[in-house]
Image 1 (tube, one colour):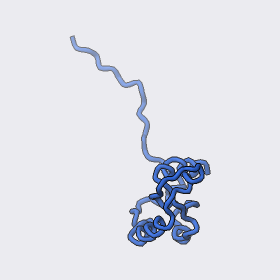
Image 2 (tube, one colour; image 1 turned 90 degrees about the vertical axis):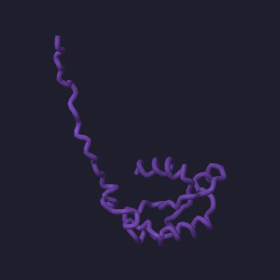
Image 3 (tube, helix red, strand yellow; image 1 turned 180 degrees about the horizontal axis):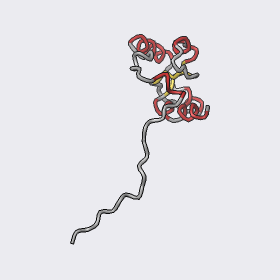
Image 4 (cartoon, one colour; image 1 turned 60 degrees about the vertical axis):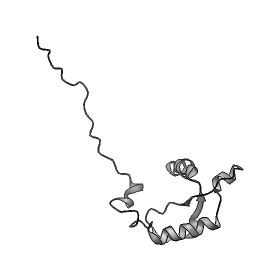
Amino acid sequence: MKLKQLKPRLQTINQRRVETVSDSWRQNKSSAQRGYGYKWQKARERFLKKNLLCVYCQRDDRVTAANVVDHITPHRGDQKLFWRESNWQALCSSCHSSVKQREEQEC
């Protein structure tokens, strides 16, 4: 006796990525095209040599080595803002991936 094949009851959802306005400046650009090439790597290295500790951890009386140069105000492709050193802060990767991301999502 052959079993009858059932039709699926669930509809499939088109899982196309919905692009948000906030990340549209990145579309189809490599990291170097977005400004993160050799010149940035050198500037980042100089900045981290002068700013050794994560500013977020320091606020919480923790001492953690910084390894990320973060743009305080997201530059969204604005190269003037990207290169403005007064808009940079030293963060550890943990704070950059958690606290900073939450802050930017709230805006």
